[in-house]
Structures are given as structure tokens and as C-alpha cells.
Image 1 (cartoon, rainbow, N blue to C red):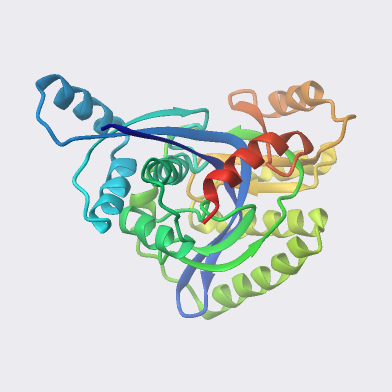
Image 2: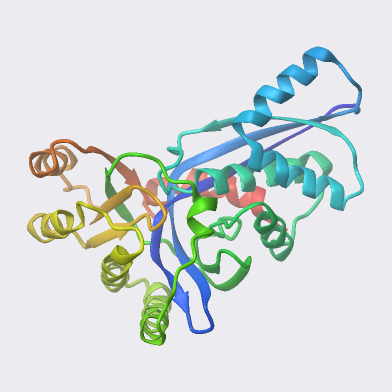
Length: 308
């Protein structure tokens, strides 16, 4: 008997903050956006079929990380089902918007639904980290998370309601290779990141979007020595000229973003045109956080999948 399950997961526009804490513990604070992945998992008897094997090979080539996560999950349950997935996603790939994490989380949620199994967040953290560093998107709303260790620092039940004008620097980034780089951090740098984390967590708890945006901007500047963005100076200047709350960085990706408060008076076309005048060779587009009021239906659907 075939079993089918469906799971969803939002992406993240880079990170509100990313760095290293004392003791060389890498961490990030995610920023969930409405772009999301929807994965359908179909389980069947492990029987050989040339057609089925060809279909699986094509699917695995596109989504190897998601399949690896599902195989770990099935193995932990002592199951040997054939497993096939279909993925519907509007999250750009290789840009630092958490496409692979969203696919993996949505896949695990779909498998849990197919098997009527409840997931514990600490188990999902461990399983995903066996595949690759991940962005803690299996927790609701905003999370501070040790992404290479799979450990939660804090979970806050709020996402700042921003429209983000994303500006792509071009190219693609491989998250796994990026996180394998050997970097040296000074005690002063790690203390600085701890100070920023100690500032952003109460700001998120207090729903202080302006203070959160200030830390996001500071984090973007601090990361220039690690993954420099050619356009950062121009984007910082645009933020000031256009009245943005601040700048957000995809620390292991290719995007910078201008943070604008969600208001009905935001002239998105005019703002995009001004960015195009200053950075004519860049692709730019709008993203909205899940904190925006019109994300409620999608939020409810995802929370249904993430309970447990």
C-alpha cells in the first residue's frame, strides 16, 4: 500500500545576524520569507522497476540533500520503503535564501505525515545537520541557531514585518563548501558577535524592528572580510537615501536586501527604479517576510505541518 504525505517550509532571506561566538561556535539568526518549498513524498514497496529506477535517478540528481535526509529518517525508523518526491518551490537556488534547508524540512514533514509520525525538533536538528549545515527553519518564526552543530539558541515567536528589496550580486554559492572553509576568528570578533546576539534577541522579543534592522546592518558590514559583497557600500547609501530600516545580508549567498517596513504607502516600483539607476547591472526583486499580515494563511498551513 502506497503512503503519501505533503510538507511545506518557508525560506529565509539570508540572516539577520551570522557569526561566531566565543569557543568558535558558529551561529545565525534567520529571517523567514513567504517564498517556500512544498514537498510531496510517496512511499511504496521496495520492488525493482527499470522505469521507477530512471525516475528516481532523475529526481535524486535534483534533490540529493532532501533524499539523504529522508533516508536517515527512514533508517532511524527501521524502514526500507521506496521513496519518491516531487518538489514545488519558488525559492531561488544557490543564492543564500535557504532553498535546500526548506526542501529538506518540507520533505521530512511530508514523510512524517505519510507515516503518521510526530517529529521532535531536536531530532530534526540532528538529522538535518548530518546532511549539511542548516538554517533552523524547522522551528517556527525566528530562530537563533548553531547551524553547523544543530543546536537551538533561542526561538522567538515573531518575524519583523518587512518588504525586502533583494539585490543579487550574481553567481551561485555552495553552502556546504562555504561552511567547510577554515577561518580564524579573534577573541575581539567573537565578543563582538556575542554582543550583537545579546542585543538582537531582546529586540526581537520586544518586536523592535528598528533595533533588529540596525543589528542586521551591522552584521552585513562585519561579514565583509568573510564573503565580501561588491555592492555593500552602494546599498548602505541607498538605504539611507530611500529611508530603509536597514540592510540584510545573505552571509553565505549572493544577495543583499533593503529592509522596508510593511506599509500600504510603500511605492515598490519607485524604490526598485531608484535601485536600478544606481546598480543597473543587478537583478532586483521584492521578498516579503512571514511577519507581513497577508502571510497568515500560509503560516497556519506550515504550523500544521510543524506541530509535534
